[in-house]
Length: 591
Ligand code: PEP
Ligand code: MG
Image: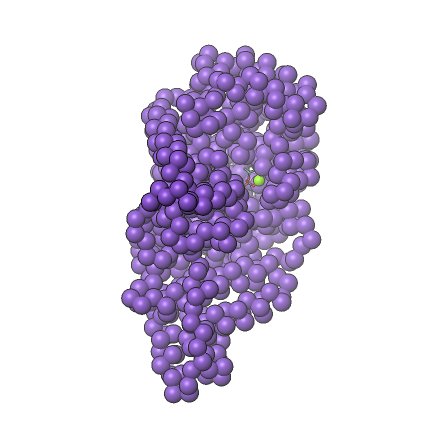
């Protein structure tokens, strides 16, 4: 940071993945691929190259084992690393490398890259999403072996050796990369892939470091050693900043830290509106480790546990006992507060490596979530039994995703009863009564909500999907994101009718979509009658503070006005008009 006036000050824009502002030195991941030696070898060198390869494989395995040990109480991340460790020794990879060394006469580094490229090519030729996932894994494992080979010190780390305040730059950061960062001096992430709900963003928020994701040309514009500013509040990255930009970033970072500390201090204050109406704020979690974080942020339980994260990056689904142990740990960490365990929502844009799904033209409209679960009852029953067994250790509620018809709810009830009988027959303990709720995230379910409210124990609005399906906008399409607005009047009407049905039939209604973590949108939802919100833990202090500043009558009047609007822009304008000044600091992270 020499403060020279010839700074490049290049501004890259992406998506604000995790809040905060950090300054650090860029460490570009995956660059080994561009710099590895390409050398033809003599016949008499082949044996030595194979030995080097074997040693590198052993080092990678050892390193993955050490990372697994370091993770200790994080079983799902550990399972990912174990799966990678198994793949390092994969026969197909070994055979490919042997061929490259002996027949093509290439040095070990070149042999690894060529063998991996060959495997990836063969996998890509097969039109199977399961195998496509594996090609990603092959790439990951190959990169790691390559780094081990290239490392002069003979040490392979998950990431290059870090010293000082480092900002990791990658095309994508795998769960194994981020899990390995727990003890490293990493101050921020920047990735080319990803959205606010992608794994990198979730992990950055869990580690409480800023992240900007979806920076499409990050690897082309940032080199290792560059000083960069990562602004996770605005979704901006500045490469080689000017002294003024550095000063500004430092003070913004300090302001944000002070501001979030202040919000954190309100942790033990019960959430309520200005006029004293009590609200419930719960946490959405993806990884078991986040349960502790949820408690630290003052969550009154877990309103959405996305159990599909237990199935990612592994070759076979987790069995009943494995899932039971994870659920029990989460339930015990949160009790006496409730934990809503959502049955796996796999398919669509979610990871599929443990299921061999047929190729689909429209995966979002395909074999996803409850549809997949009901089509694989043996896998579904393992999960249901694990959930039932966890209920002996705290307040467990079960929720099913992407329900489109009452048949799916009734069929799940039937399977749940069967699972209960099986657990009981084994003499294993479980709670007498376990509520079974449904997510309202498909328009058909929202339209039939009066019936669902009479048959389900509770309803939870999944606005991420409800918006996608009601407005016909792919939730992963960055270029259409402007159309997927939670402020769209059609969405407000759907939400309002769900809330009214809940009241009429005395069925609790909550919301767990990302709309709940936006101060403006959450206040609008409050005005529409919602009192029970679930969101990423880090958003809880902010939403609590937002609610403390409004009266219910004020939010209701605003919601009434919004319901009469004709477009999303009009609604947003109406809401901002009422709240922008009141929420200025919450919206900008500044005083
Ligand atoms: C939703 O769709 O709003 C939701 C909470 O579920 P997910 O984001 O996991 O699909
Ligand atoms: Mg959903």
